[in-house]
Amino acid sequence: MVEAAESQNMGELAELKKNEGNAALKAGKVDEAIRLYSAAIELQQSEGMFTNRAVAYIKQRKYEEALRDCKQALFLNNGFAKAHARAYACHLALGDLESAKQSIEAACSLGDQSLADKLPYVAELERYEGFVAQAMERKEYREALFYASKLVENCVDSIKHLVKKIEAQILYTPGDMTEAIRFTTAVQEKFIGNAQFLFWRGRVLIYNGQVDVGKKHVRQALNIDVDNATIMRYWKGLQNAEGLKNSAAHAFKENHLEVAVGLYGQCLEFDPLNCAYNQSILFNRASAF
Image (tube, rainbow, N blue to C red):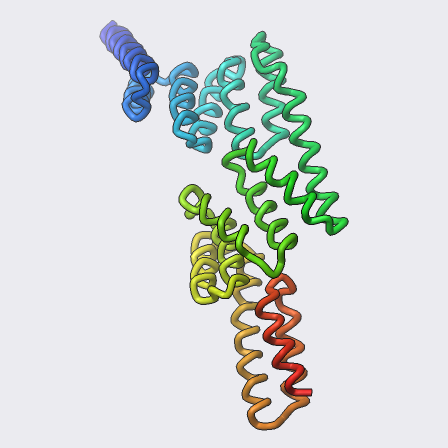
């Protein structure tokens, strides 16, 4: 009896905190709402409480936190349509279009038709992904950049689409990093803790001639994701290219011109996208012929 009474009291207090959270959220006090929802969850977990906190996180554009709450809500009750609906918003923002579509379908199957008209929208974004891939394969980088930009506009927290836009921008204007610098600067506050963003931002800076700063970004990326083979390979390539360039310069100074030409040629194999660096290497190699 005592345990039942305590459980009832905790449930009532949790409901009170949830209602206070709802009021705070309605008043635009999002941080306060999250604090109150968290207090309610500590007292008694329910799918509704997790979903409400997810809504608050979505308002703060904290989509990964919101998605975790949606998943927890669905773990408690996979038939809770509102959690599927909120998960859709998270998947869309994070660029997981297949999961976004599945969330819409799940919500609709449970009677929530509010997102039914979003299915064609998600399908259109999936087509954009295909257009980007096809354009990149054809080396139509302006077209790839156009559709990648559309995806970034709609999937506002998607690192994979962000990276694709940066790559397309570099390839579209390989000798001019102005737009790539502008774009990565504009979004760096949001993505500064992401290894993929730091890696590509670092490359943009290197291509722009800001080699030391760019290398720091790449190193930071590797510190965040130590097992990332692509970043590790690029980092080792940077170190190797620097060593080759120094060796080539020494060979040239010692009048070992054939050796210098060969070493400069190896430098050119490292990164075809680094136009400024490669142009300087080509100039140096031409001087050795």
